[in-house]
Length: 237
Image 1: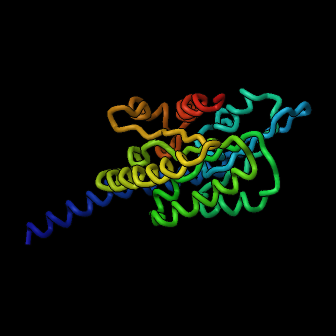
Image 2: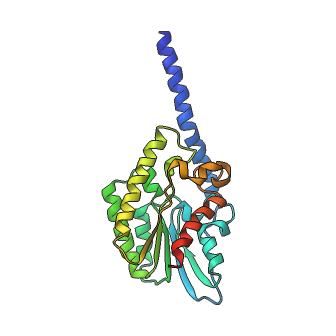
């Protein structure tokens, strides 16, 4: 009987260890999302049109100041550009397809797409992921001759995930990453920014309080800076 009690206590404690960080992350993420407005820019001397489409990372959740998000950093690099941001917290590939469908007659000099993290964590089927990504890129290529796509880093390494959930999410990240890489390499006008890092090479883990936002899931302004440095490598190609 004592063994059963001990096992139950261990199970309860491990469940708390496993799910309490997720609960806290969910609540803090909701606060961050409510506080964040997607960066947009309207120039009186516009010489370029940029579209940003993404999930909460496209919105810039966690950055604190919208100017430190991906879209905001684009604004710094292209001060005379019009930047339209149709990102939405929680967006998945199917929602991104619909958003582009709604404006598919518009033309842009650059489309930057940050999508896929929610398809990772919500376990979108591989077949659906591939079909939706293909459809999204087909529409995007009709709207622009230059498209940059990124998903996220190694989602499973976010401190809000504990083992074994962390391992499951990392496996999912690798699966979705492979779909993105295989689909994008077939398209001449689409560049893929690979943010995935193994644990030993991930700068986010060297200082989680610096590179992660308070929810320990989204990037902080410094985290977005790391991502944007990778985006910059293909931005001017």
